[in-house]
Amino acid sequence: MDSILQEDKECYVCGQRTCLHDHHVYFGANRKVSEQNGFKVWLCEYHHNGSNQGVHCKDGKMLNLMLKKHCQLEYERTHSREEFIKLIGRSYL
Image (spheres, rainbow, N blue to C red):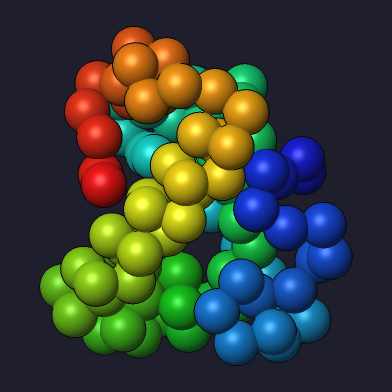
């Protein structure tokens, strides 16, 4: 998995190195865009979908938004905000 946010295979949130899931930061309709542009991170099961705090769960909304913002900021280090919006459809910043 190529990611613009991380090089090491560990949970982006807690650093755990086992039971990792490949998470597309912009999922749903933007899953393919995430795949093509490295908008992905490793998440442990707990932070992905194995708890109420998981990024795909009700109480994980803040984590989901944080990942989207971090990813957009990293992308905008080498691209414009307009380019990001063309890819994803909106800005999270």
